[in-house]
Image (cartoon, rainbow, N blue to C red; front, side, top):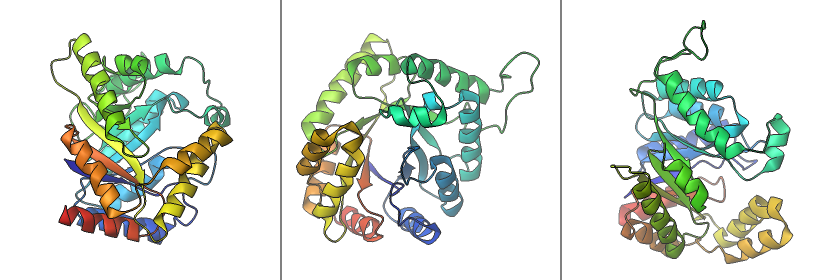
Length: 293
């Protein structure tokens, strides 16, 4: 099973030097991919810009927007950004798309929150048409650049519920499945739903299965992991934030290793670690863990 790492895009300590150091360790280490999430409000860096820098600073790891909250965007503009990222990386992009769960981010960019699932279905088809060289409208020029990967990068769907999974089965090349605490039973449940949806959709090829969970291998990892999760979840309410922050415990090498082993046993093709801090120790210790695993 491949292992990727999400950049610490939410951390105020993330600056040029730290981002470049993370990219160096990830590209030199035993990792397959690096990713970055997308949020509008809060102190986060802008996803496409951060990943463009990462693509220029690396040579080997795949570059994974994870995830584009696609209904907040113009599909044509997103297709152009992703194709450009594919060019900068030399064809190393796999893109994950989803609808997100933060109405405030939609409000901040003036995008409607309603009917976002249907819009995303339509947008995926439109991006693929753009990448194929089809003009966005009659009489217009095609939108470049042409992606390095024929037909454009693979598109994964960030899904959890059964309805979203069934919709994704019509168009996704893979799925990104989330368990905040790296719980085997949660990912196993999602995989069963994905397999059923792919079978019902008549898909002949199975999707690439990617899992992810929060963790911290930094000093004071448990305290900082809990604080990170609280800040991340508080948009859903105080009770949810407190409950989730008390439950996460992937803050030791043994705990992280146990979740990785569980994801691999379930047949996941890749698993993303999502560190709770911007400390370089997060990725240095993760690299050491994987080397000894």
